[in-house]
Length: 424
Image (cartoon, rainbow, N blue to C red; front, side, top):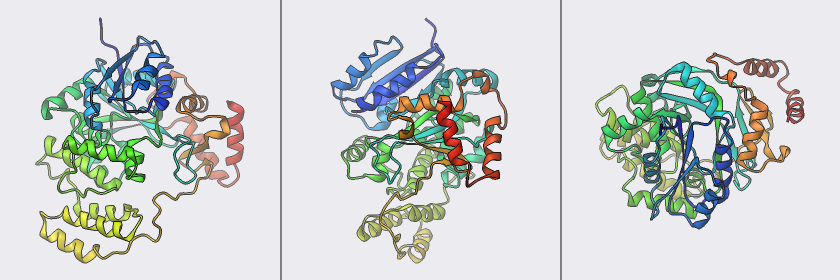
């Protein structure tokens, strides 16, 4: 029996309620050569029941007999993938209906071993982040490009560019040759507490060049049970506490030169440094600017109290124990700095419409309350013709949105939303 073209891998832990809709997006694909690997991280019986309810021969179900750290569960999950290309999605995320068909077309054209794409962003209705619950962000103004890894890795490691530009297994199809090469070089696929970001640095380095696709292929969704959401915004929640304790048990702590704090620049730098240590330890051109890291970490801190602020600064200082000059600089420049005026982490306004780059929608306006509904909605907005996967620099849709935005930036948003409602 020949191997499938794709393995869609879904690591899951106690999220049967969202997994149901994630699986629906995977089984709605109009491409036949793929398998779905559900790796159950010692969940309750509801998870297995949810998987079995589909009665699909495409789904392969495996289960750990004890709770594993996120990276360990991903390791187990990917080890059961047999496809030529591997894709990982979260158990509250989804694939757009055209994804595998169009990704296959692009791989046939480009002949690459790593193909990265844009994602739609969605917050489930239970995410209490300001007014961002049940909201959708659809990227529209992006470019297709071949990315030179050595040019982009330092920018992302130092937070000059967003980490989703990496070919992470979360937003990319990675050829099994690259996965086996990484496993052979390091003994495993995931070597940090954030497996998605780590995989992005590792595969970018090994691939040397990779394709970046402007068209969204998957949905990156956040729910109250998401590890990323809990870790950054609800560190005292049971989900976050389990994430931290399982990582400690698996000895997946932060790198000693990276501050172990609740800030995205530190999480990105930690994944980079772990990848560097095992893949390119002597490459000075691929390195962390530790002063810049300290500055970025201080800017990213969102403490609830003065005590938490001071404690976080001490953690940053402690990460500089190996460098006396760096410690002196931080002590003189940043250690006595003042906390932000507000002790609220996420306080951004929400404005529906097109902001010049992304289309922002309230899913409630369209009767949508789950990731499968988002997938169907996005297909109606973006179209699903596989011929749209041609390798072009800028799509017609992008040109139309640019023209509309620059001609009438303050008046056309509601007209656009009305047209979208009519379209669907």
